[in-house]
Amino acid sequence: MTIQFSLSLLKPQVQTPLDITLRAVTHQIEVQKYILVSAHTDHVILKNNEEKLMKLTVYKNRLQISAVGAGQIIMAQNISQLTIFDRTTYLELEVVNCQGQKASGLLYLKKGGIVFKKRQASILVSSLILLGLLGGVMVLQNIAFNAQLKSRSQMIILTKLDQIQLQASLAYHKSNHQNRKFGNVKTTVVKDNIVIELGHTIYTRELLV
View (cartoon, rainbow, N blue to C red):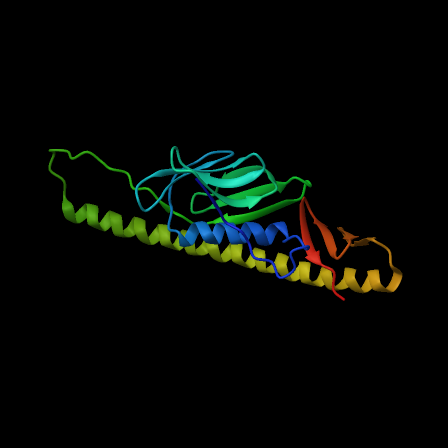
């Protein structure tokens, strides 16, 4: 059995930008409340609310979540590669589509708990509680700081992409040249889309009329 997760498009002939597709995939995984079991270079092991182990990976150019004997959920098509970076408090997912375009997104998941064996030695309960509270505060502060830092970075990138999209659209309608360069950013107009090379990442934006 296969369950298809599809992104609805206003115009079926226009392909959804890869970064938007990945953002929708990470959001879908987070709202389903999967628990992170382990992260590897090219796949992630998850646990669903039925305690079943699931695997997020790329198979036959499809980004999917699968389980043995339970079918698979196709999250995105036309994906050739998935790379996972474990940033401790979150995962960074980098995908490459069949056209060689690259996008990255953040995935925030609750980690699976570790079960410790009981020891018969006497332990000062108050000390353990205090240490736990202090550790929890430090972890929460670290999570909040990293999330805020990443959020600011993403907002800066999105703002820059908006500016480049506007500049490239105006330049194309004025000179009808498909290839342009704005500083260290390269743009190429392909049909109704603008392919933006920003650093080592490629984004796709709609050509403004």
